[in-house]
Image 1 (cartoon, rainbow, N blue to C red):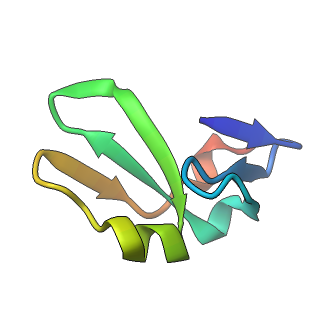
Image 2: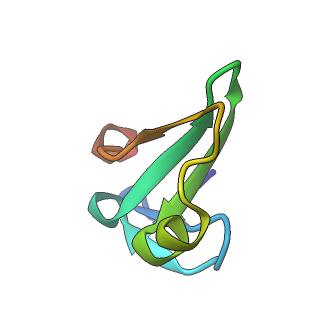
Amino acid sequence: MKIVDGDKAECARCESVFPLEAVSLLEKETNRDYERVLCAACLGAVGVPRGYSLRRDVTHLGR
């Protein structure tokens, strides 16, 4: 996961940069080390696969 300027994150799929309020965090339930930030468009394309959980509020990751 790439945090940019302390209050933005780079989408793991399209590599665009968004404010933390506009992204979600996809986590693998059995391995919390696997985390991917996704923007709304990419989340819509990928969805939440079986075995993953979605955290919509990631603002705590900012400064």
